[in-house]
Figure (cartoon, rainbow, N blue to C red):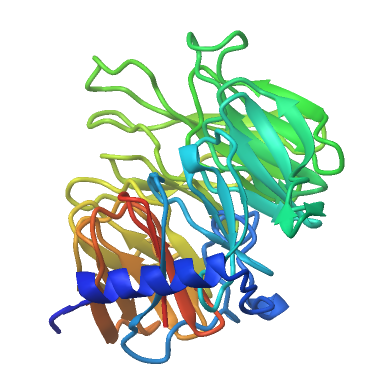
Length: 402
């Protein structure tokens, strides 16, 4: 099925409409239903990237609105959906946008890192270049009709490297790179209430993907920083969520490079780790022993999605694969484009967007629903909610498709 191109004229008209609404002080929609929200990277603490209640567009979508900022949407970065659509626009700061029309409800012009925030208890935890910042999800205090009281707390953690995950009253994230910060690379747990550091766990290098949390354990995939070594290998660490004690560590792979970029996913007793230009590796969640691996051409950089015993894997070879989550046995495959961002799953099926801007939706059994094309480059993941699909691009555009 050929892609429908969402034209530049349509894009500019939508962006102008959203800007006019913001200028007029329009607040737009009151938000989306609670069960359709997307409050953190990968939807929940396991990074499963699947919300069975989230409803995307019913048919081939058109552009409802576009928000333009000087942002850069890093690999697998996702917008968040709650009472607003929250977009981390990096140097341009954090935006709270009306879900229906993209109108700007509030904007904090802080110097943030290009990572997905996390939303909990009315607070956005946003990685900042100097640490983690707690931002009021509603924009905080207001004066003369403008939001001015963004900050709730701030934690000094040099050089956040991953999106935070939320569980057990804490935000958990990768921080720093060995040799590039005063404390080297580590995984940190930060208390949701006040931003105090619960614990820090040292790693040899850095963790780029949001840690996956389940059953009191945090699973973090650390990279190998020896860029000159073609046989480099990353390491997966299982860490006790209560106190930061080591549970187990597993060294990954041989050659080619096993150097995780995307976040791991945990579920059904396994931890699924995309290794970059190497395969996707499934490890036993209790021991770290390898259960199976999937090795498509060019490797798997993006985080997979997990729903109802099926793992959806988007490869650098431009193929989406649905495999049995327990065994890795294939169920179906569909052609697309090179995927830097992972797939997501909602009520109406599976969504993925290729590097060249082709957004595709399939049913759970692999039947194609529609294809449309937005402005490339794209390295993030699409998020369905309340009949919409939200996806950001490397040129700083956040699309609301309906």
